[in-house]
Length: 180
Image (tube, rainbow, N blue to C red):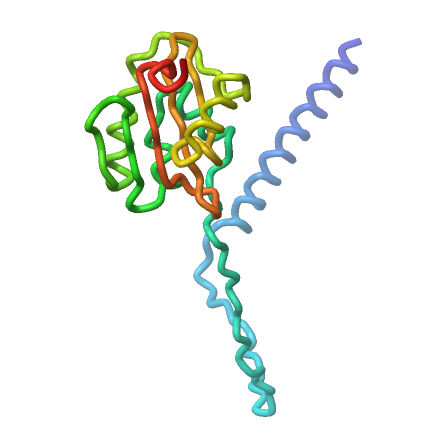
């Protein structure tokens, strides 16, 4: 039994010596060396064809106007600044039954839209009898428009031009100022 222990010990010692020697030589081969590395230089071919320049045509993308979903989201979230990129410059703004406003820059129109922050109700942009009545009775302000009426009667209309940009904004504290 003692012979088995001696053989196992010798084999263990030889294994450790082998691992150590392998690590030493491996480390020595991967370490930095002072030998210069010579790389072959490519032969120069003087008969190369140089391609003619290609003209790259960059397509121009016409800015797209706003859609109804963007307008609804901006009004419901009170993030009116998101709409300024979709407004003509100038944009006409009016608040019913007031002396406000005149044509203005999109940034000024965004400030005027804060008038709608006073509403406490929820907004409806689906066509109903109120919206249909506004379109029929006041086409100059509410025709071809995205119209929203809040549950507490606030009104906003975004009239769109032929490119779907907001050209006119009409607002009121109550649609009942316009419709009986």
